[in-house]
Length: 356
Ligand SMILES: *[C@@H]1O[C@H](CO)[C@@H](O)[C@H](O)[C@H]1NC(C)=O
Ligand SMILES: *[C@@H]1O[C@H](CO)[C@@H](O)[C@H](O)[C@H]1NC(C)=O
Ligand SMILES: *[C@@H]1O[C@H](CO)[C@@H](O)[C@H](O)[C@H]1NC(C)=O
Ligand SMILES: *[C@@H]1O[C@H](CO)[C@@H](O)[C@H](O)[C@H]1NC(C)=O
Image 1 (cartoon, rainbow, N blue to C red):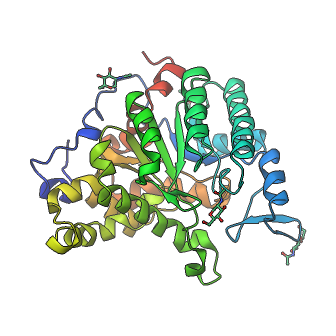
Image 2 (cartoon, rainbow, N blue to C red):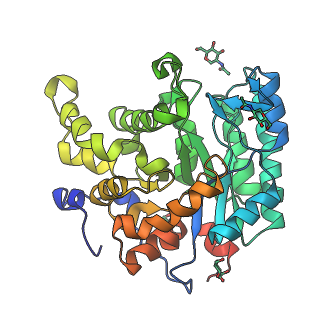
């Protein structure tokens, strides 16, 4: 590690085993080669199912969680990557995934159709796009089957998960078979936020505005307090949007969890777990956010994320170009944020780009 972050200084001696291999990658990529780990596809079969399930359409626009679902085509996706200077992106489906469907068979069948579409997009652009598998959670048996199909048969670069699937949060014991399957495969995971189990807390405002970041904190906290992160320490996980509010709240969570009446966990160990993830830059590129993130984990654990098309090109473009200056990152740090960290998380991208 070049410049230890404040937290790493605090934790000297506590091993972050889940990130131990983050510098194993060597390759010929230019430091400006950009890998965006957070971008979404919006296939029409998904929109149609959301509409049939009762999600509102206002003035011709579909809304999920009180937020407009953008128009999307594969061509516009590639065109946007080109205008952003993004070389490669991992594509996933945003919330609510397929967990709005009540029947396991329907959820599984829609997830399968979407995964086949994701696969076809990556076949069309093998050096530009990598797919993150959509799992039909909270239906665990069906999700395991889909996980195997995506990783073992279709060769996806990783798995997409949500902070919760219809109220089942990461860390829930029912998800143990999923975590165990991820751990045995060294699979990497991109975690996207979702609406919290109880949406009335949003007071009628758009849920993504604050409830998505808070749900990210909730999932990370639950992984700590249930002991599930300690049980599955090797799964490489990216949390979106700079970890929501976790850089700011981690010390509070670790402090409370250390009280004998609330669990008596060791503060350094809790902090190491809370910071033992990768975090993407989507909607997290202000100087304030990047200072917090840099101090919390350092450039070794920050990856580029755009959240296109939910965040439109007009906003993504200045956001991505602001990272270097607002974060006061060196060229070597930008190299990691642009591509090296993503390659360490998703070794299958190295294969797709024929870098070794
Ligand atoms: C409704 O859609 C039309 C066409 O896209 C747009 O011009 C108009 O501003 C929209 N109205 C509202 C209230 O969003
Ligand atoms: C990456 O994208 C940039 C900007 O579009 C381009 O100049 C460069 O050639 C690309 N690199 C590779 C290896 O494709
Ligand atoms: C989602 O949770 C609600 C409330 O617990 C339940 O009524 C509904 O059936 C669940 N839906 C699915 C898909 O499990
Ligand atoms: C998982 O990663 C570890 C450490 O890098 C390695 O020893 C092991 O062989 C890998 N297992 C699989 C199934 O790839």
